[in-house]
Length: 258
Ligand code: NAP
Image (cartoon, rainbow, N blue to C red; front, side, top):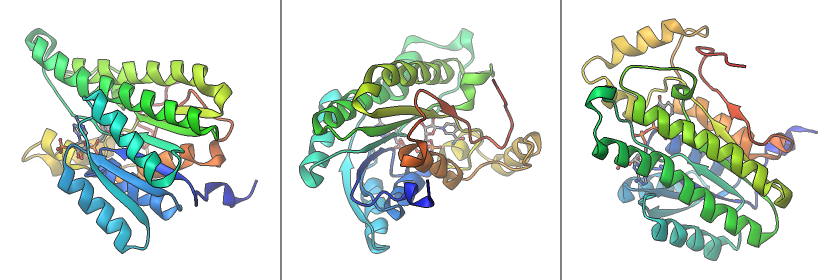
C-alpha cells in the first residue's frame, strides 16, 4: 500500500462546522487531498469564506448555510451535494458547541440545546449521509467529532460530555450497521485544540490556560486545528480501509485509554 491511499481526487466530502476551527481546517485539508468539499455551517458567511479560500487555492468547494439541528436542512444539504457532484463519499460531522455548567445548576434548556447540536445534529448528519452513500453504492467514510471529555470527568462538562459519549455510541452502532455497504464510521476525540471555541471558554486567560494544558501533555503543547484535520484525513482515506468503529485521539498524549 503506497501513499496514494491518501489521494482523494474524484471524491466528494461534506464538512459540517466548516466556518471555523477544526471544521475549517478539515475542509481545507480534504480539498488539498483532492475532494470536492461542501462546506456547511450555521455561520453561512463563514462557510462561504472557507469555500472561497479553498477555491482561491485551486480546490473545489461549495458553501451551504446549515443548522444541523434541523433534519430537513441536513437532508437538503446532503441532496445538494449529491446533485452537484453525483456522489457523497465522506462526511466529517464537526459542527458543535461548548457548554459548561455544574451539574446542580444544569437546567433543561442547557441539556436540550447541547444534545440538539452535539448529538442530534451529528445523528441527522450521519443518517442522511449514510443513506446517500448506500444509494450511491460506492461505500464511504463517516468521521464524527467526539472529545477527550468522553474519557474523563471534568467540572461543568456534564451536558457536553454526555452528548459526546452519545456520539461515540452512535459511531460504534452505525459502524456495525453499515459496514456491509462498505461504509466506515469512526470518531476523532481531540484534546485541547486552539480554536475560537476554546478561546471563548477561557476569556482573558487563553494564553495561560493553553500553557497549562500544554504542560500537562506528554508532547508539551496544545493542539492546532490542522492536527485534528490530519486525523480526519486519515480516517476518510483508503489508508484506514480496515478501520471502523474506532476512536482516534489527537490529544498530545494527555489521555491514553485502552
Ligand atoms: P468552533 O471554532 O466554535 O467551530 C464550530 C463551528 O460549528 C462554528 O462555525 C459554529 O458556528 C458551528 N455550529 C455551531 N452550531 C451549529 C449548528 N447548529 N449547525 C451548524 N453549525 C453549527 O469549534 P471547534 O473548536 O473547531 O470545534 C469543532 C468540533 O470539535 C466541535 O464538535 C467540538 O465539540 C469538537 N472538539 C473541539 C475541541 C477543542 O479543543 N477545540 C476538543 C474536542 C472536541 P457558530 O460560530 O455560528 O456557532
